[in-house]
Length: 376
Image (cartoon, rainbow, N blue to C red):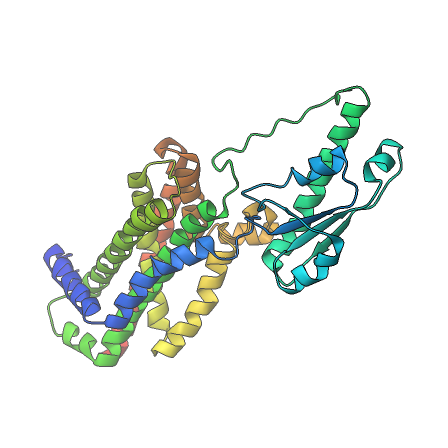
C-alpha cells in the first residue's frame, strides 16, 4: 500500500494552477462568474417592487383621495403623477406609467355612506416583474388607508388587535441582499464542479494522464492535487466577490463571520470538487461532461433551499436532497451571512457536509482508479 506523499500532492496542485493560468477561457469564466454574474443576478428583475411608475387620476378631490395619493412613495413607488383621465392611454402607450389608479367622483361620500365604490387600476402587464406584484401592493395600500380613514371618521374606534410588524435581517425586503449572497453560494457549487471535471478531461484529451502514470505518484495524490488547487481558486474568488461585489458594490451587510463562511465553503468545496472528478470519470469528452452538469447542477441549485424554501418542497424531495452537500451548505451559509449564526449553531451542517464530502471523495477515488486501470 502506497503512502500519501504530501510533496507530490503540492507539486501536482501547482501544476494544475499553472494549467488553469494558461487557459484564458476558464479565467474569464471565473472572473465573470464572481463579478458581473453576481451583480446582474442581484439587481436584474427584482422580485420586490422598486421605483414603480404610478399616476393617479383624482376625480374626487377629497381628503380621502389626497390621502390615497400620498400613500405611494419610495422605495416601492415613485412619487405619483396627478394626471387627467384623457392622459391615461397616451401615458401608458408611451410606457410612462406602469400603474394608473383612477379615483371616481364621490368616492369619499360613498365610502362614508357605507356603499362600496370601485376604484379602477390600470396596469401595464408588459412589465411583468412589477405588474405581477404591484397590483397586490396597491390593493393592500388602498385597503389600509380606506379602513384607517373610516375608523377615524367613525370616532377613532381602535381595532381590537394591532399587528406590529418587525422585519428581521432585511428590514426593507431588499431582493439584492438575498440574490447576491445566494448567487455566490450557487456559483461556488457550479464552478468547483466545472473546474475539477474540466481539468481531468483536459488531461485525458491532451494525453498528459499517461505521463502522470509513469511517475511515482498514486491516483489519490493526483486527485487530491486537483481538489485542493481548484478548490483554492474557487474559495479565493468567492471570498473576493463577497468583499468587493456584495459588500463593496452592492452595499449588502453581512451579519455573521466571514471566516466561518469561508470554513463552510472550504468543506463544501471538498465535496463538490470530488463530485466534479466523479462526473469527469463518467464522461468521455467535454460535451458529455456538459450534459452531465445540466442533470446534476439544476437539482442541486433548485432543490437545495437556495431558490425555493425546502419547506415548500414535497417531503420525498426534501428527504432525497439531504444527501446533497448543497442543502447543508445553503442552510449554513444563510444562517451565517443572513442571521449572524456562529459555530455553535451551524456545526451540524458543517459536520454533515464533511461526511458527505468524504463519501464523495471515496466514490470518486474508486472510480478514478478504475479509469486509470483501464488506461494502462
